[in-house]
Image (cartoon, rainbow, N blue to C red):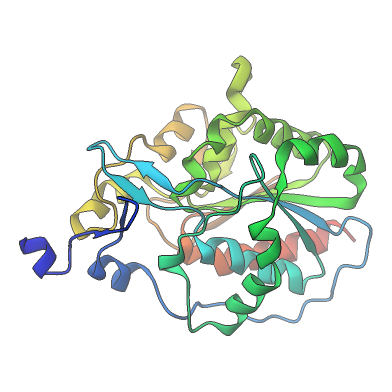
Length: 284
């Protein structure tokens, strides 16, 4: 009751899940982003496509049994897409089974016209995405048309995706064909797919920026999460040999070989800039 009075209680949704408390939303979200509308020299080559792998799942079960209302974080998805679009790239939107993309709409920056514009531009693709298996069946041979695979963050990226063999096949496809892999926050949960079937972790020895488990452990105190996480992502990646370059949920971004990563929603603008600039430089 006291937490509710102080605005620290997570909000109960109609499906029984919980979204962040009033205080958490005030501290962790904003009506407008820090997107920089940069005029890039647009890419005009043949490798103009980027595959974006979204989650189709909404509810994450916490250790206490409560469900967190999650999905992909809209800022983490749409800011990098804005930069890459401005740099001349286009997107193919996919989810594991072709179900609609799920966004954390409680984090949507309603006062940001640029974000709203690209969201509306791709809304039909978010509602009717490709199925990953269909992409594998029809597009893997057309590797010369692709520049990168992008896995946005949001806690929802830890639902289903880390166990999805198709995701693992696509990350290996990108790696073997010199495509870039872009991700941020909890999106690197997708990297765990490269260890399926007892394979060696694809990114062993890589530097990367990832959302810290230490922050996830703190957020239940302000009602961002309705309980403690079912498992920790950054420690899992460390145990597999990744070198995590950040300790805070900040603007840190990292480029290591063909891997481009960011630490948190705060890094979305910087990640977009780094990805756009890197792709334009490398794909001349």
